[in-house]
Length: 168
Image 1: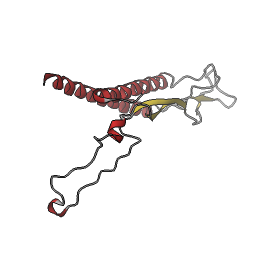
Image 2: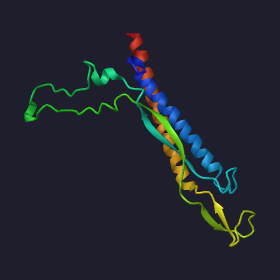
Image 3: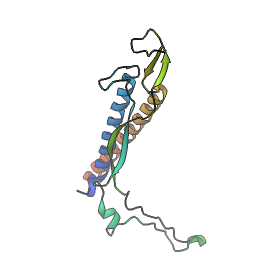
Image 4: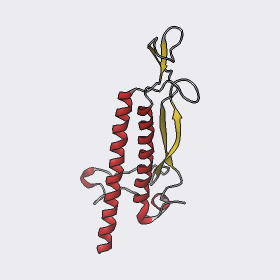
């Protein structure tokens, strides 16, 4: 079902909020298991990450194919010798929300740490630790938080515009 009318911006922001919340949860799980050497599947915890994609089901088709298409305009033709600008429209991306395609496991090998006293150490004294880099995870958490905040701000701005429209 395509997005229509006034609520397109709200739905797009809401899809971004959902995606970033899931991303934050996965990152939190990675951080919580950064030292887990034994799982149900056997071996150390494997880092997970979220794969996002444009949601093809959430698109405002009127913006793409309707009479209100996004087009560049100029006040005068060839104003100051500059031709009328043309703005290309990427029709598969206009008005699309975002969705979580999958939560995938990182294929990187585990880190080997020398600790012969650890109960999961191999014959050489090395322990297979999760492939979680805490610094990378914290950086990812900051970007996910900022993206969440940006979507919340966009949602608030859209709500504000709708409220002002009701005052007219």
